[in-house]
Image 1 (cartoon, rainbow, N blue to C red):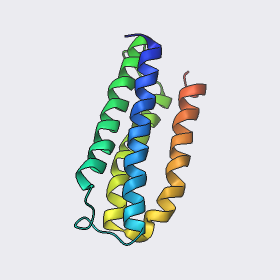
Image 2: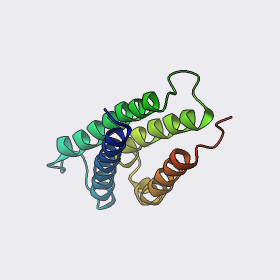
Image 3: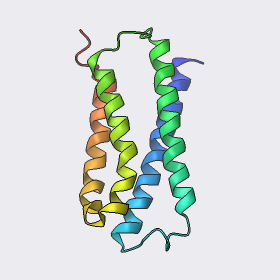
Length: 124
């Protein structure tokens, strides 16, 4: 696959993940719980499939860029962001009071990921 195709897939994964997280956050912010969420499976699937697409397409892009070993720091930070965003789906379920702050923090995490991808700081 081409680098451009991996980028499009990466964006698709990001959008699926954000839609899933947004849905989870809004449901719990409105006082919902797992039992009252008729679309619990769909929302979790969007989040999980999005994360998988992000991971696979990200490593595909790295291969196209020739970064097969010895990852620079910016890649490790992006992998850390991926783990954090993956874990964010559990926050509203366990601590509904953190849902609104999470809705403000998630775009900042996404912006950091975009910054790292565009500028590639710490490349050495």
